[in-house]
Image (cartoon, rainbow, N blue to C red; front, side):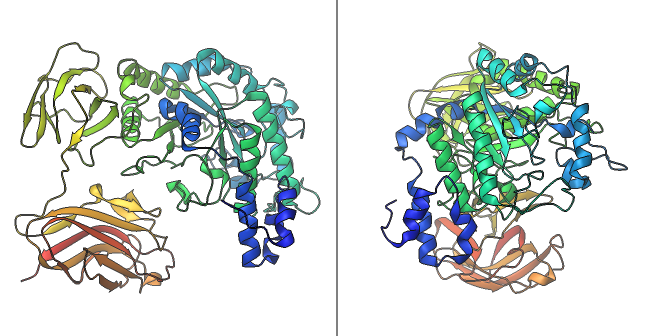
Length: 608
């Protein structure tokens, strides 16, 4: 982006990029000053061509599966504080323990059972290709011997450097070593949002000094351990600004041009959805948390779902709700089929050991990966917009991998595609399967019984390109048109929530939901919304469009976000047969309070 040459502010910013002045003085800037400042910060970020960016991201896209490790001082109390037993890595914030009291865990942290090679072996045996460990979580305690503070591992009886040991073990095993680093810091005196219980903090918080400290620690990490990824978090509090993010991103990209940096370095990740909604935010990939996006994000968008193996990120001695290998493999397949990576978390205990329940689950996943990993590594998203229930697909060139969650009762899998299949087998077996082309696509005949294992995988070698048959949802025989939640394209952070399935998080006025339906009988329809909206949000306005004049609606309240009602909201004309796109979005220039609505269903009933 070209930088306009005007105002002394520009030169001042360019000269002081190492100390993000903009964040400190933004309140006094005019809109024009702020725009110039933003351009100056953007100009400092090293430029790369699309080919260079792809080369930098290549190993990440190949890997698909990684281990996340949340480990820190909070492992000592193991999630227990007085009568509370559900704490973990947020221990200090949730207990509101004075920092001076929390510091008493330092002499108790002596993880003599920590074995970096054993942890890396567990990751590798599970089929994981990279490892991300907390160098510093929100409590500010460094899991490496920083020269900039005593609030780190060097003050414990342990003395060793777990990051150095893990980095070396990863290099030996062929695993990419990466680090998580919190921007937010509950301990540091200069973090702008100082907690009342931080009884060790002194002076007045100064975010410029804090940013210099942050850069200093990150320089230590990058130069000492050479991580493949810097995985940021804790960016949502007000002291961290977009301007500071731009400055830090430029600083790190210059420090290590090969470094990959997630989007949590900036302020636009849209909560747990984890995806920036505006191109001006920086970061190399998106970070959905504890969820799998319903449709992925399309070609050219890199993303990674981070999820826990039980119910906590850090170690909790009361949490033994381990996800089964079946659940983990299903998640991995679902994520890969949508073009994403899966970052699965384990939380070592205060002795430095990954709990046995996690190890057992990882071993089960590893057994599946030994047979089926080629259907995960280096694959791209499914070429099919829609597949029959119980199937997922990944692709590698002219090879399709069809993951069969539910073994079909009739022994047949029908893929909506034309083009010849030159070979079909089940991974792990050599027997050829029979295929046949038909009106609805290619039919593969399976063995009568499903093979042993968690998720069987069909390997289909194609004679040419994949040629999908677009299987759109169809208008019912009685003329009704239903807009299914499992076949919707979402934008602006909108997502499908699971309890009950609904379109939720409709907080962005630019967010929209789009369906394409095969219509046989056009005409005028009565539109029925199955939605929930609390009283305080009554009056929200939306438009429903089918390629003609939109139906504009003012929504009445239903009672609460979980009180669903089916309401006839008006009529909509569908003018033509064929593939018709239906779009629902907030009315232009509308103002949302908490959100537009929670939408459970949309039905169009023929009128007359």
